[in-house]
Image 1: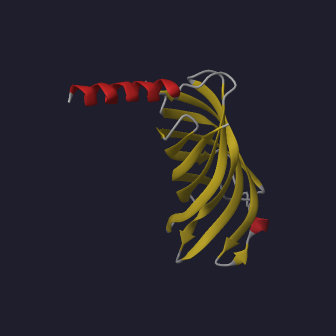
Image 2: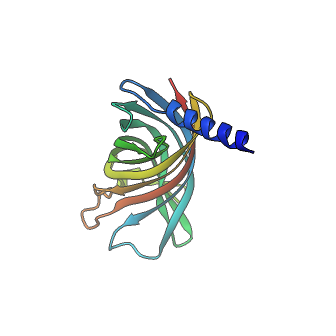
Image 3: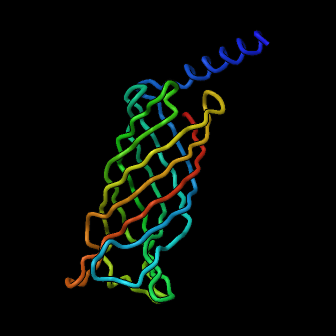
Amino acid sequence: MKKIILIAVLATGLCATAQKRVRGDVELTPYIGYHSSTYSSGYISNTNTLNTFQFGALGDFYFNNRWSIRTGLQSQTMGVEVLGFDEKLNYIQIPVNANWHFGSSRAWNLNFGLTGGVLTSAKADGEDISELVEGTQIGLSFGIGYKIFLNKRTGLLIDYQAFSGMTDISKDPRFDVRNVAGSLNLGCVVRL
């Protein structure tokens, strides 16, 4: 029994030290997630959250074993369900987040920063409404995640990311509408 405990302790220690990152390390993480969005507006009522799937790829560029910059491309659908029909705004989003890695093996991370988005389509009940929606948006993004290391080069990332729009997406000056969203994601981390 003592040998089993000693082997487990050594294996855990080796695994933890093997995961430390150094300046110049890069990780690529393709992911898929469950995405929920709504509008932040005092003018729109009778709305429910819009639940969709999202996907993308993120890259972490390390400065040391605690800090990295995370960026990438994300395909996200935002909007709401209004009076029985969906209002869907499809975006390509580009986050630029500072990412702090913590814990003994740096498996945990907190990230925060800005995300810019470009509208690719806008539909309400199947009808094109892109003339009513601004073509770009900027918002605050933040999240928390945990990596499960499989070996020195690969792992799984489970994280929650949130987005809070800073720009008005409505072209109508009577309304101030901003996207608000959250997603639970699963990704495959690959150290390059």
